Length: 226
Ligand SMILES: *Cc1c(COP(=O)(O)O)cnc(C)c1O
Image (cartoon, rainbow, N blue to C red):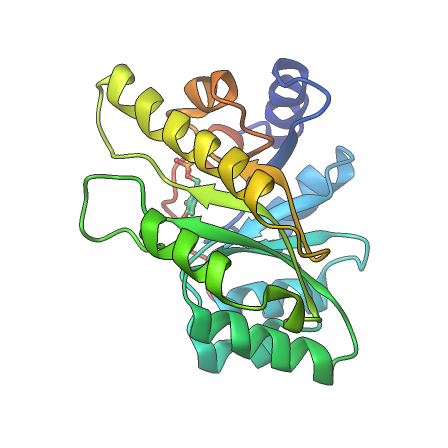
């Protein structure tokens, strides 16, 4: 894999306003360094321990994005290292992040993950429950959290129309929330959608952050573990 070339090629395909998150899960710090040396700074990890291990041994100016399901008891581990948490899927997690962020004396950028796929297995808020939550809770009280937008994963399918409809739904939901919620710590500018297989559709539907692993680093075969 020519990681540097893959990064530069991908970057060229994206509008300037879209952030490329290079998903480096299972990949070694050496491989991440290749992307870093190509000038890349935004990386995505899906396990708390792996994110922390890599953050402590790679340069400080990397922005680490937590994109995988996050257990509450792992929040403390990542709080000093994480730039943005894409996978906030419950009020309990939001509370825990807020508490740990307060202790660490920082404000953490978060995305609310919404369940938009057919599959049962994918995590995320039900859209109606999320609207109800945002309507009824005093979000401003989560003063060490800044909600920057929404994240979602489409159904794993070849049906482009279905994927498009799911991303479209999420994009509409983001606009709805933006119009409805006035808390100063809710911004709704970001939409984290699209992976190697479906990022083009995601871009058509307003993605501002694409999370791309395989196209940059290759298949996940040799698994690096902290
Ligand atoms: C692994 C992963 C990706 C990247 O998937 P690729 O198909 O390798 O591009 C994106 N988002 C999440 C949440 C992931 O876990």
